[in-house]
Length: 110
Length: 116
Image 1: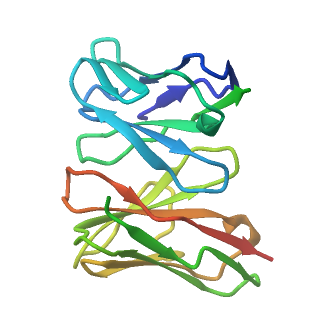
Image 2: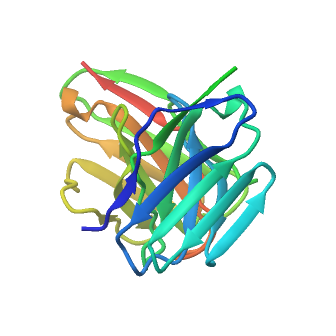
């Protein structure tokens, strides 16, 4: 059973602070790791992806990957109220299929 | 970015009827399309993978006779929920990818199905 674990939250973050989201996965064959944002009642939106160990930055977002620890994280800097959403971690399996975690709800408070 | 259009966005039907949901890739050819179902406050659960011109591959526990998937062209896949029941009420989301195993995945807007 392939599993993707995320803290469900809600993670309350003051506006302007850093939100730190964690994700662990069980499939050692996962090669690519995606982070999606999902607003209530909407479909997921891609934030970024990472496939090499280390950090990858894209604007206010930084993804971190450690394949040895089977751990991937997402940092959101300078959090804004519009960042309030559920963030889904999704590693791919060897067939390229996304395996979604249940998501972490982030609430950015003004 | 690429656009995937899903229709209808909301549908309400009576128990026992069938509902068809369409998923179209508007500006690229989608070799592979995925269908997901999401219950409130739950994760997206992959139902099936469809490659153009071939039969869909269903995930364990998904009834292929109940959830009919057709991927007849590189821009269109359909999901038909046959003999729908209230427990089928959910948010159905399609996604499409140009490559069979790699490439960015683009999501449709989702379809909210309510079965009375």
